[in-house]
Image (cartoon, rainbow, N blue to C red; front, side):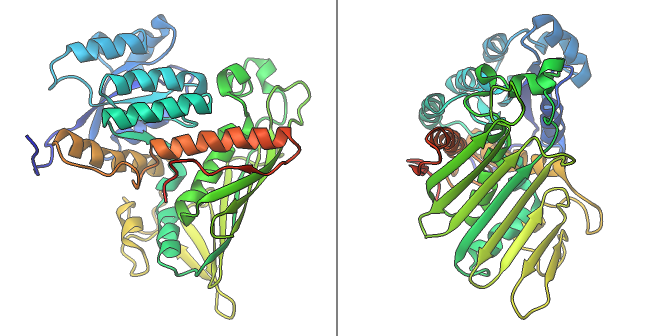
Length: 398
């Protein structure tokens, strides 16, 4: 029976991926429990059953719930009483495994939080989207940069009209860690990201340009219409792109640019967003996430800081903060904000209540499918020397 009462317990989490040597799996596990609303109780931490079991102690997962594969995890968790089995499964594995794991979890009725990009290709994304719509589960995609308080502040400023009509959006994600051919040195993260069988049709553009594109979509709400893209592979012998630049047109007439690099010397994780409106502009940088500049001609430049108690802070930004002003919050907290927003809908689902599935605060299955279409059309455009191609997904959120 539906109830208006909140659930009075922690959500139970299972992690797929995240074994020893993993970066993003540990991030998922840390972010998931940051607000004390969930606990990690089960996992299939590696595709190697022995390593999966051995990695369990790193997360304090009981050995009887440290499974040798995601299939065993789903089968044995379903066999448990409903008040003991996990509530959701987090997928923190390389791209080529996302679909089979997420689809199996969705078909079994488990909520899912999946790393990006959503799947290996567009066909898988569309099939997964249909499965999610049919099942009614909560499905989130960890485009985690949308979780920063000042990113949410920027979104409120744009949607409220403070910047006027949006004319242009510049979205950049610049790294330099792949400036040498690390994949030949048995570097785990480089090896799968540069392998088309495991990464998909794009390298740099699939790995990080999708984040930049999604960030612009989240903040502006603009609907993309067409794309012209040029991808390059500058490191000799590499199979996938390591640099790319795209121009995006939006339905309102605005122009956007997406630039992504993994071969720029000295750059680390430099995500930047700039939005130009008829009344003002804003700029934000992920490496300095607690500050945002807002500029208007003829007025002093305004520096917004992350301050949950300031009168200028929007409610959505304030609710995304955990610490008072002057205490930096960053990557883990932003990641945790994606989890927290998804938890609200998981709690509603458990209580039998209705919940929003399209216009969610967290990136959802529709955003994930849109990201895969962005990758597909970027590659296709580049293969035709920048030919303009449609980029609006048929179920794009407004």
